[in-house]
Image 1 (cartoon, helix red, strand yellow):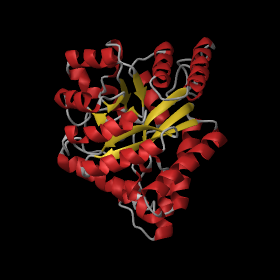
Image 2 (cartoon, helix red, strand yellow):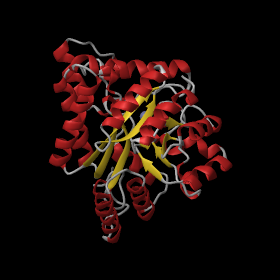
Image 3 (cartoon, rainbow, N blue to C red):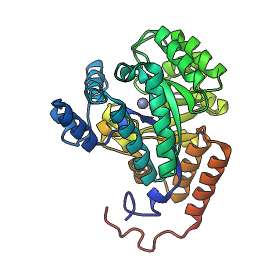
Length: 350
Ligand SMILES: [Zn+2]
C-alpha cells in the first residue's frame, strides 16, 4: 500500500527533509511517556493525537506556542534530547528521507545540560550517531527566536559558526509578527561569514511585504514556508531568479490557518513559476502529519509520479547535503521513477 492510495510507493522515493523542528519532531508516544515519568499533566490536545487547529490570529498562534512550550517542558535532560533526536532520524529514514536538516534552538535545553554549547554538542553528537545508524545524512540548523533579543540571536550565530560543518545553517523562527527583521541581520552576517546557509522563516503568517524584508535583510538561501510569495508574481520571480528555495509545509499551514486545507497550499503555482521547493513537516507532533503525508497531499493535489519525483529532487538540490550524498539520492529518485508503477494502480484503498 502506498502513502495515499495510488502510484509508486512514496516511502521509497528518496528525498531531503529540510523543515523539521527538534521538539516538534517528537513522537506523541514519546511525549506521553516522558510527561508521565515527570508527573507533567498534558492538555487533552496533546494526548488525543488530533492535529492542532487554530485561527491565523495572535490568539491562534499563542495557543500553538503554548502547546509547543508544554511539549518542550519534558525535554529536560541529555537523555531526553538524545532520544528525541534519534527517533526523529529513525522516523525520517522510514519515510525515505536520506537527508535531514533539523532545526534546533538550544536555548531552552541549555539550563538542563550545562549551557548552550553542551546543548548543541549533545544534538550534534546524537545526530552523527543516529545518522550513521539509520543511513540518513543529518545536518543541524541552529535557529534563533524572533521573540528574543537580537543579541541572543548573535550569540547563537557565533555558537553555530564555531560548529560550522556539523551545523549547516542558521535560522530564525517563532511568530513572524514579532521582532524587527532588520535587527537580526548582524546575526545572519556572522552565520554567512562562517559558510552557513541562511534559512529564516518568512512568508507564513505575513504576506509578500514581509517576505521582501526577509530577502532584503537576511539574504536567505531558503525560506521557511515562503508560500505567501505566491500572492505577488514580481516577488516570486525575484525568489526564483535568486535561487531561493522554499520549505513548503502544507499540514502546518492548514493547522495554523494560513490556508483552509493542506491541499490549498499554492504548491502548483510556486512550482510552475520555477521555484525550488522542499516539502516539510515542520512540527509533526502538533500537526499529526509527517513528511510522507506532505507528499501524499501533493499527490492528492494532482501531482503525478514524475512531478512528485521532481519535488523530491528539488528538495535534495536545495539541501546542504554533501555532493556525493546529493548525487546518490538523486540517482535514487531517477531509479524510483524508472521502475514500473504498481499494477493495481487506482484500486488500492488507503
Ligand atoms: Zn517552522
